[in-house]
Image (cartoon, rainbow, N blue to C red):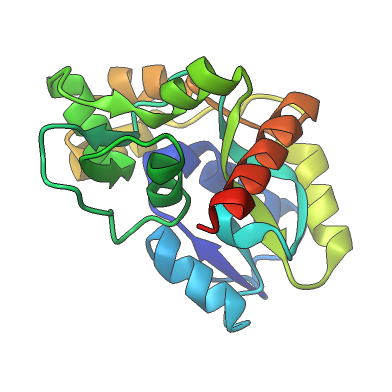
Length: 218
């Protein structure tokens, strides 16, 4: 089984969980990882070179998914537009570029850890999740955990991952801090902004996104 691994801080709890899950379920021997940014993982998944991954919402609609996603109920700090910069998409992104267009927010789109670092250094940005929430009063779903086969395994992952909050070992927080330039304290504060459960409200937000996207042919 090849799992697409996005190396952003927002998935750190899931990566910690998966390491423990594969060890306890004896899946580690058959589990391989392909690492990349969201846009690259999307392409590998569509080509079936990746069996499961967090797929950008803009690409996930026609694929099977479990009730796990990357969801923001208010602000998110890692999906931003810098309004005074020249209009520019983030090449690592898919959903966020579409979201900026749907919200009619012009500027430079930045996502992921570099966006989080920017948000911690300045107020010169628009938080797209916050703008979405202010306008439509529903969460925004940035990605869904999608899979091609072996539904039983992914439903088990869903059940166990959502049972309780994952505690991140301090050495992994320190490692993430060194990689991103964001302190362990700020990483933990940021993770409080992320929800992973695709509940009724999140599904309502996802449906709204799909309706608007189709209406604007984006």
